[in-house]
Length: 169
Image (cartoon, rainbow, N blue to C red):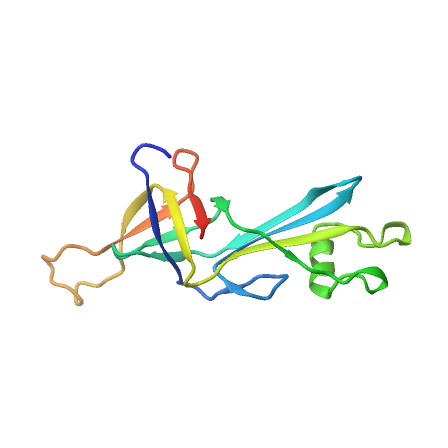
């Protein structure tokens, strides 16, 4: 943790339309995928994909706007089962392999792949560590008095000077 950073716990809440995790189809605010390939007696990561939309961390203090791009993630990955043998892989897995230039049938044989997915869903408890900046909230002067304090929202995003970490519970 950097000086001035404190962890904050709360629930993820949608600000934008939810994403759909490509393999499981679950609605989420962020997903991460891994494709692992059998190499000898080990499973080696061959492709990693992640996508997230800005979301609200709802805690007792009113919350913060989290921009998850490039954040360090501590998530639990689940193995997504695939069809074995001649049936090949389900369409969403074949699409993912194609997107990452991986061939399911090199030289006519079914290659050994494993697919893993992790998601953060709305309402899930998470912990965020990072530094934020207070930005003006969009409220017109007709909604508040001209002497009233300008409402602000805490924006937290990853930077090299202040890395952002997100952990799901």
